[in-house]
Structure formats: structure tokens, C-alpha cells
Length: 80
Image (cartoon, rainbow, N blue to C red; front, side, top):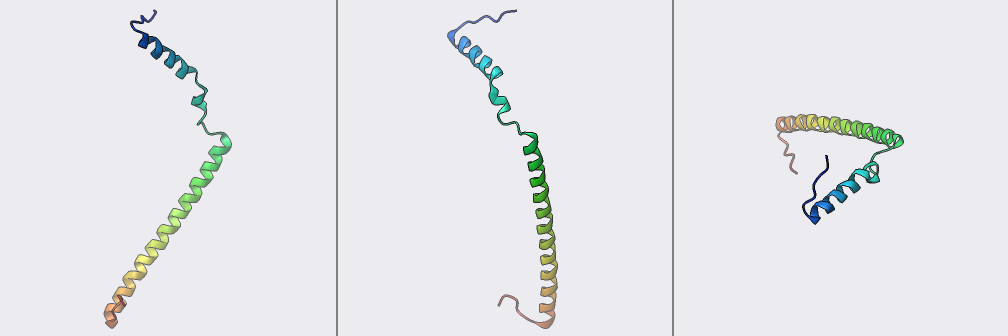
């Protein structure tokens, strides 16, 4: 089954499609196994850092609440 070409633009389109199908650029952005391992390590490091930052944030919120209650009890203004 052959494709009928009706205009010169169809020929250009077909040649572009042929180039796209045989282009080595498809493999250009495919990471190597070494890069995959490095990316995995980096993702784990970022995850660990994110978790530790969240724990620090939770501690700060807890301390802030305690400080506010104590300041209210002792009638101290914290905005100074």
C-alpha cells in the first residue's frame, strides 16, 4: 500500500518523518546506568534533607506555641 503524494509539501513532510524516525537524537537524552544511580542517590539525599527540614519546622512551631503560652502567662510582649 503506497501513500499518494498530492503536493510538494507532502514530500517534505514524508522526508521529515523519515528523518525523525532514524534520528539518533532519540537516544541523546537517555541516561546511562551510572547516571541513573547518581540520580537515585541525589533523590535520596534530597528526600532526607526535606524530611529533616520538615522536622525542624515542626519543632519550631511547637517551641513557638510554648513560647507564646509562656509569654501570655507572664504577660511579656514577644514583638519587642
